[in-house]
Every structure is written in C-alpha cells, then in structure tokens.
Length: 150
Figure 1 (tube, rainbow, N blue to C red):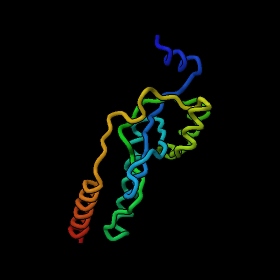
Figure 2 (figure 1 turned 180 degrees about the vertical axis):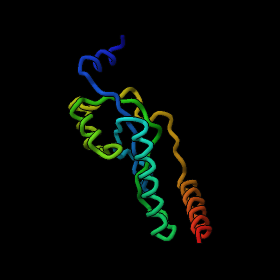
Figure 3 (figure 1 turned 135 degrees about the vertical axis):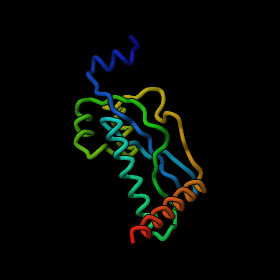
Figure 4 (figure 1 turned 30 degrees about the horizontal axis):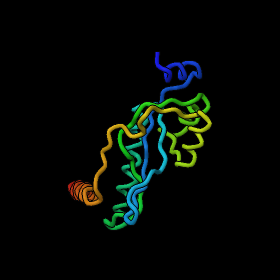
C-alpha cells in the first residue's frame, strides 16, 4: 500500500474531482486562478455546461467581443481527496465548489484537500485566436437555430 493510500484511509478522506482554473489576461498571459471541486464527474459535467453557457451569453451580450481578462478551466479533471468537512461544502454547492487560489492554498496547508503529483491532468490549452473562432462558430450556430424557429 502506498503512503498516499494510507493517509486517505487513516484520515477517512472522500474522493472528489479537482479541476484547476486559470485567469487568462491578454497582457500578461495565463496564470493560476484556483480550482473547482466536485463530488462526481456528473456534477463536474453539469458545472462545466453551466459555466460554458454563462460565457457564451456574456459573449453574445458584448456583441461578439472577447474580454481581455477571463477565467477558464486549465486541463482535465483529476481525482483528489477532501476531508468530511470540505466534502460537505462541496456537496452543498450546486454542482461544485469554486475555490480561488488563496483558499486552495489554505485548504492544502490545513490538510483539507489532497491531490497527487499533478493538478492538471492532460492539459488542453487553446490559443486566444482559437477561442475567438470557437465562440464565433457557436454564435453563428445559435443565430441559425433562432432563425429556424421563426
């Protein structure tokens, strides 16, 4: 049995889904921006759909202008472990708990949150130009759908 497994059993930690976030800034580039914690992959999927929908709505309201600063998922979800206290907070939040970097560091320091050697899984970062292209394609599809309904 590995040392990590012993810690998980001894402290009776709950398995959760951890997703790193980053803040994308057109001046200084991406930087770490905390994480979101989810009780299951289903909750993570729902959280991701809600976040994407909010971003797309903001893009439409702005007239197709991508903001100079925005937050986004950084990489793939990975398994992590939380104390019962933190797990209750996660389960009490709708589809997941958003934790900014300062709080994430505090949770780790206080041994409320434990993850392995990686925070990111396999990173799937896209360029700013790719993001704009994806948002334009999505808006074009939504516009076409709304025209078809008329």
